[in-house]
Length: 334
Ligand code: AHM
Ligand code: MG
Image (cartoon, rainbow, N blue to C red; front, top):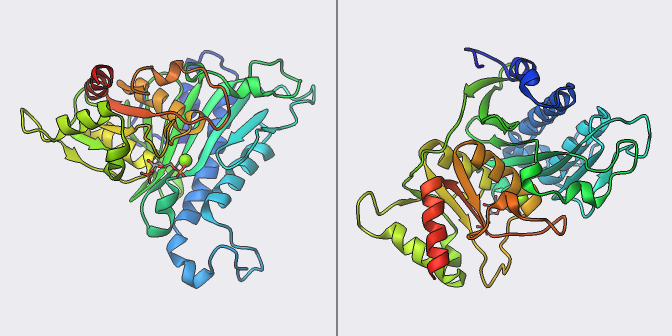
């Protein structure tokens, strides 16, 4: 239940009991993501000061090495979750392998693992365009008190217990689901508090925005080419509008509010697609479904895909239900 001026901290506590495995552990985990997001937000907002405080690779005035923002975000999220000892394993888009956190210690009763893309939209980092963090949370499948294994990380998206993103935009927002709808919180930077600003977010069933990198058009499968032509045709509420930020979190965020579809199909350049199933597509797919939208690889529901490797890539169509279904019908018919 949401109230006016409710903070994220209050919301987490109030909704803890509606979560089926209630032990407070998931709440503590989301709290630590909230904390790391605030720290990363502060750093992202300083990105334009690079000429003044020094570029990545330089040493700053305190004698600390300046890090690239994506490296900084990766370290900050991992550090926050490790220090608070609330997860047993982490996998990050920035790391080759998963990290086991004291999970071999039989006193460590932590049940959750996190998969994270610490700063997504890397091509936008240096040009003052919105970027985001994406996270995905599962319960481990191997016994507590034993080391985590790859099996804990290669679970189908439908097994996620929570997922969310942070968008570092004109305002910074944290949007997440624990499987009971999607809620969005806006940061008041003056006091460092997230407030519930977008309760029960839902994609409109239909939309008029399509988001795709049309520079790759000639490399797309025929079904996607046909769907793009359909979007551009003059008929009914078409032609649709094209909007592409090139930052998945930001494109998704706009589409959930206004109604639209995001597409990163496979192409001859990226034969299996570009986006990562575990760090990008699964969490966004859970959010989409929880927000009355849909996510597919063109044929199969994203959340039903059986992962085979940590950094696996898949084609990704996500957004307003009717638009995704229309795109799928073009894929089937091509
Ligand atoms: P990244 O993980 O290297 O940042 O790549 C993911 C990003 C998405 O946020 C975005 O939608 C897409 O890549 C943009 O790719 P492109 O520049 O090929 O259109
Ligand atoms: Mg990414």
